[in-house]
Amino acid sequence: MTKNVYDMLKERDFVAQVTHEEEVRDYLSKKGATFYIGFDPTADSLHAGHLVQIMVMRHLQQAGLRPIALMGEGTGHIGDPSDRTDMRSVMSPETIRHNVDCFVHQMSRLLDFSEDGVILENNAKWLLSLNYVDFIRDVGPHFTVNRMLAADCYRQRMERGLSFLEFNYMIMQAYDFLMLFRMRGCRLQVGGDDQWSNIIAGSELIRKKDKEAAWGLTFRLLTTSTGEKMGKTASGALWLDERKCSVYDFYQYWRNVDDADVGTCMRMLTLLPLEEIISYERLEGAAINDAKRRLALEVTTLVHGRDKAEQADEAARKAFSGSGDSAAIPTCPISEEERGNTYIDVLAEHGLMPSKSAARRLIQQGGLYVDDRQVTDLFETLSDDVFDKGEVVIRLGKKRHVKLTSSF
RNA sequence: GGGGGAGUUCCCGAGUUGGCCAAAGGGGGCAGACUGUAAAUCUGUUGUCGACGACUUCAGUGGUUCGAAUCCGCUCUCCCCCA
Image (cartoon, rainbow, N blue to C red; front, side, top):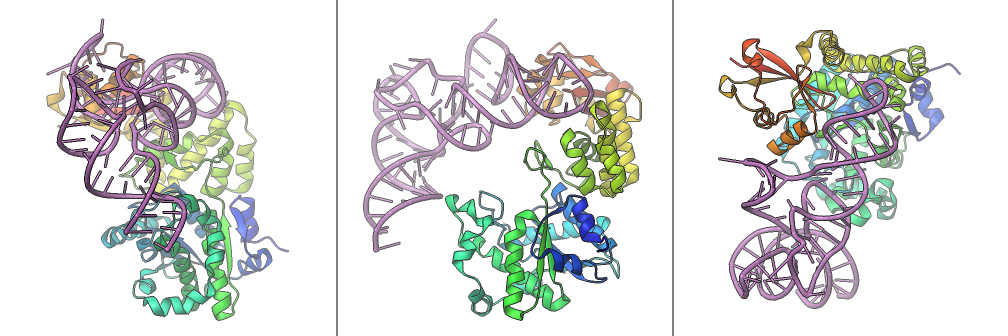
């Protein structure tokens, strides 16, 4: 047995479940063998979770396989109930369309869509024009409601309620797999572990309808060592779009992961050689910070490019240890009219704090610093440095740094 | 279609003999201590504001009352049982 990509994925902690280990392993050793991963256009930007999927694609492509990135424009009209307790809100066709466009745009920077690269597909192509009766007569007989209800992905919805619309999601995804098998000879679907039920539904459909072999492989969801989903910030998902999450904040997210999670993140989200990762994993105590810094730099580079990643790294050094270039620290433009306003007003006004009350609390609790000087006076007004020097760096709490700049 | 139950602050969830409720408790968030820009732990805080007081909240709306999250009418939403 020679070492192949499958083993590599295992070594890097990706693999969660496989339908048929030997066959899949064998399939993955074939040059040009096709596999697909689906992307649900639920937002106008990819987020940290998608990064895992993208890395898997890159690794497999590197190994000579043919990846298909399937945009779920069609399935987006239904909404995947997997792994969630609440009902998805129904999105308008325009929104879904727009989200797909955003995904494709972002992915073009992360994946190789060239001639021999990743194939882009969109299930709107075959799903939206389906005729209901024809469709259920075609695939319906191959599913039993009994089994579907027993599926893991629906279980947690049994209490809260699962609409018939959402219930159909699994069948749609199974149909996608069938279509890609017929159109592209794709015999393997890969996805997050929450997709397991949907994936096996597809491989079974191919077996039943076309009497052909098809397999599924899921990779671990990005979770913390305590089981919580990673890639969540206070305000929601960790977006890859710079406009929704600054490069600096993105960098800081990874710089701040728990000690216990650094290794896994490195394995799954960077292209560093395994040996190097293992040596990082051996670090202990404060030295782990070196690993985190490397992790942040690598992941940020992947998403935003080397230059921006290095700027973020510089800015972080400046913010936390005084030396470095503060260029990448998030800025907040202050207008001339604000000269003389209190910090409470300024912080609330620019959304740096959710309300004046919150800003007031921050100061009362000693969490506001201006140029490393703690603000103790509740009514202290904006430093003139903002206008005279053009900028002043303030710190909110232990970790948030913001550069106030004059905007004229 | 018939019968029953429920809708509370970011979430879960107390509170319904009307005042002591801006509303228990937990989670989460935020700030501080300790540290390594980690975890765990501890402390404080967590509606808004011109702030030891004032104002707006307990699905919506209209009432009863000196006074309502708590009582009554209507509306909306959700759940459950029967059909």
